[in-house]
Amino acid sequence: MHHFHYVNGALCCEGVRIEDIADRVGTPFYLYSHATLTRHFNAFDQAFDGIDRLVCYSAKANSSQAILTLFARLGSGLDIVSGGELFRGLKADFDPAKIVYSGVGKTAAEIDSALEHGICMLNVESRSELELINQRATLMGCRAPIAVRVNPDVDPKTHPYISTGLKKNKFGLTSQAALDVYRDAHRMAHIDVKGIDCHIGSQITEAGPFRDALLRLRGLIDQLAREKIAIRVVDVGGGLGITYRDEQPPHPKAYADAIREGLAGLDVRLVLEPGRVIVGNAGVLVTRVLYRKEGDHKSFMVVDAGMNDLIRPSLYDAHHDVWPVSEAAGQRPVRADIVGPICETGDFLSRDREVPDAPPGDLLAVMSAGAYGFTMASNYCSRLRLPEVMVRNDAFDIIRKRQTYDDLIAGESVPDFL
Image 1 (cartoon, rainbow, N blue to C red):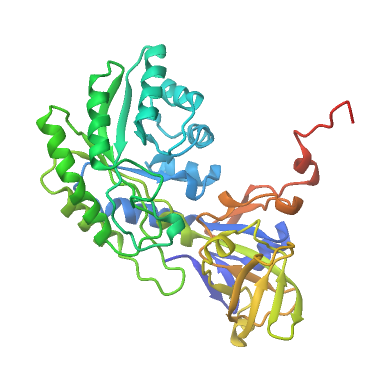
Image 2 (tube, rainbow, N blue to C red):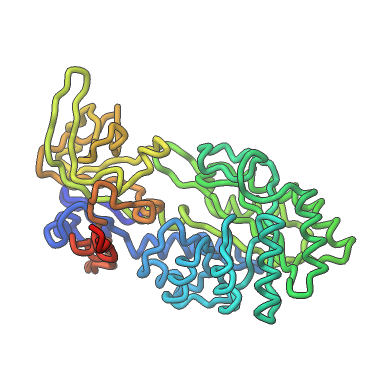
């Protein structure tokens, strides 16, 4: 459920007309619903009532400071994959003891920062990473809390670019390789073996793969227990999908039931890393139609948002519904490609499907853009990064200003020899 709806023919976010926001901030822009963000986080967290758990929102899905601050105040932890996300999380007042550091390429400086701030744990992806963490912890005179990421070779049935739990993926270790790494870690004086980690992919629309992944970890957990290596935390990652078009992902309660089944009999703390399921349908990209163009074989609707603003359609051929901000345009669907101003054939927001028959000047809302929208945006073609807006009830705030041309070249310099 989200809080985007029509009132007297005008698309609103909660109690605010989107057209009124566009008049104030210009287009294109990202727009988020405070009520939807709150509802989704609470629904996910409450699905696990009765389990010792830590919900760590996945910062990579949307790392805007206002959104991070909201989740921190709701009691969330944070899943990070970079030093920049650690910085953002601390600025948003997340408790460091609720921060989990994932990712295959942590640098020495990033590891040092995580240890200095006393985060919950680092998820280790390789033997060489473990050796570096131990080296840095030794130099700092502390013990580094770690989990080892295990690749269970479970097919999550999602897009191959966002599948992370197969043998051919770069993430994690096989059970045997992980066992060897655990043995090494157990012998290291400056490593605290805390848990086990597993993440099989993103935009997963079935609960079964999550349960199957956990069941495959049980043998390793049992073997570690026999070797006096106690697993206190099981990090099941994230990946629960949302509805973009006709997907029917399980309700968080069904997802929680699958996790409960996989963990049955284990005395551990559960860590979860939801991202898209919390923020995906809480945000939209608002864009304005610039031109209509009739080609020999198809029609085009040229808008002022491009692939640099929302790359998912170009990168994954992802589907995003497109709603007219004026409901009247939606009564006359046409078959057209919605394309942006960038000089790439891959610059499209939708193609080969029916879309609202919006004339130049009309506004369109690209739905389900709250996850992996702004965070994956770029300045390609020297286009300015968009503003972000959050609505609460009948008021809105600009939570990120639109870049200026001066911002675009800030930090650049021309060498003297030129």
